[in-house]
Length: 295
Image (cartoon, rainbow, N blue to C red; front, side, top):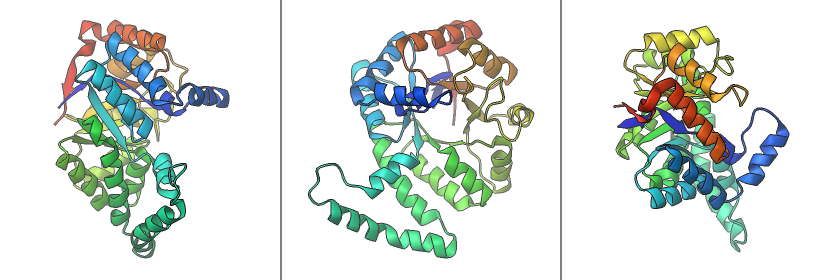
């Protein structure tokens, strides 16, 4: 599979901002509908983006379907599970449903065996399989070519040495015809732990920025993994360091200093998409639209 070197991130679309609470509220107000998300995505695609991140959120999935209908073949990279929306889906019925109490009770009964087993034995796989199955079904209409495990679950699985959980995710993604990847907020630890557990993932995504923001345990330790990893493809996230590093500086750091293959960048307006593309051209030249093979 070919992964474009610059991927449109999705954090603004679900209200994530590291600068201020007021900007988080602004994003949530801006992107409160499928149409508002799709409008920015379509503008970014028309400017040159060919790959979109998709969190397992119903609005984002529907927005990407709208983009694909308008613009044809777009590479989708899905991130699962979306813990917050998954919990919301799992604990409440849709508004206006007359059978909400019955729906909740049925879900509790269905989930109880996996929850009890996880608590009693420490075996998280049945519970994780149930959640991941639902999440993969949710993003499947976008026909993702890459599916990345959420950093929260990757970091937990590595800390607890749950190789079976990671292997189960890997197999499920391969079965749907996509390439599995891992997101992490502690790349050196998780990368080494996967090697110890005999697990190989062709794609990793981790924070990469000149401020060292979220590059745990240290910027230098993460850079060393990039240098030593060989054929692994790295997709940098948090490249703007939460929105304080200009795109040109961010891309120079990621591609030239860190030497990684690809980046994702969140944008909230067409103007921000244009700025990101100009930065990509400034660092990569006209080959910024080229892709990297991930197997």
